[in-house]
Structure formats: C-alpha cells, structure tokens
Amino acid sequence: MNITQNNPGYASCSAKNSRKPVNFYCAAPHAISVELAGDFNHWHPFPMQRSVDGWWLAQVELGHGHHQYRFLVDGKPMLDPHATGVARDEHDEQISLIAVS
Image (cartoon, rainbow, N blue to C red):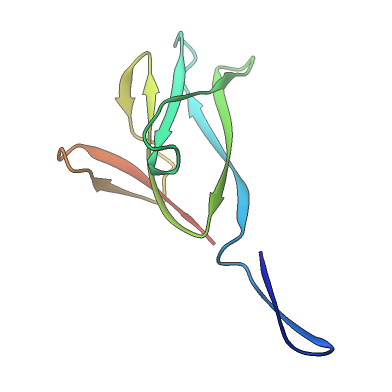
C-alpha cells in the first residue's frame, strides 16, 4: 500500500499497488497432481494442495487488476469454470481470467 503525506496531519492511501491473498480451487478428485500457472508466476506451474474432498487449493498474493491463469491437471491444461472470464493467449489457447480489486 502506498501512503503519501500531502501535508501535516493528512495522509492519503492507494490500494492499487497493494497485494491481497486470492484462493484458487480446482475440483479434480481423481487427479494425481494439479498445478496453477499464470501471468503472476511467469507461467511456471505451482503445485496446488489436495484436500480430502477432492478439491485442490492454492493461495497466491495478487495485485490489483486482471490476471491470466490456467490449471494443469496431470499436466493437461484446464480452464477454471468459476473464472471471471476467458481469453486467448499468444498460442490461441483459452486461458482463465480473474479480476482483483
């Protein structure tokens, strides 16, 4: 968070540069591994944690704005059915979008 001192006794805050934890969930009860890759981690797959009910979880600190990502379920790309939106990457493959405010 940026805090600027404009004059004595007055401060203004901007949340645009702050980061907040965002939870990602993927339902893949029969998967051996699920990873999360996105523009926020330079598309390097990050392992998600399996829960007992078949959901896979990951928490990532994201800044304000729109972010692109996909799940890799046993190495195969999978869209998030609960994503804010869907776009196409530079290889014309579909990717999930999330908006963080």
